[in-house]
Amino acid sequence: EDGIRDFCLSRGLGDVYKRQGMFFKINSSTLAKFNSKPAFKSKHIRVYVAPSSSLHPRLGIQITKKAINLSVIRNLVRRKIREDFKSNQSILPVSDYLVIISLKITSVKHEISDILMQEWKLSKKSLPQL
Image (tube, one colour):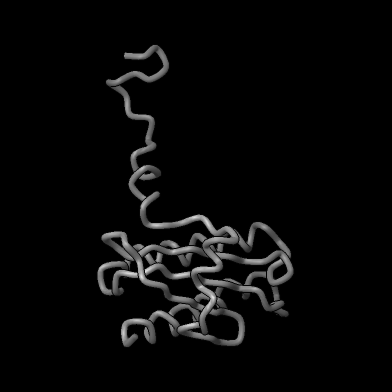
């Protein structure tokens, strides 16, 4: 025991450490890796695919403030896409997937996540054929 953590009690951080390998951070060097044409493009979503050296598919999500102004909605969309990605991770080929939402969405705020999730599901259907 190090005095900070109690080995008998769980702090509930197990899921956080397990999922860190499923997602990656987006920076300029990561974006350079995905500089080719998008594998899927719809009105609001672009999905880029790049080969990965990891053992399982990984996901990166970039949602600009211009596209979705409210952070609550941006985070909701991120959560929904991550959840859907985790549930379908076994059927996707091992690659890195970058989802970019950058085009302004003009809709009522409670409909934005529904619109984007429909587009995400369409993009997911087209990805395994790559």
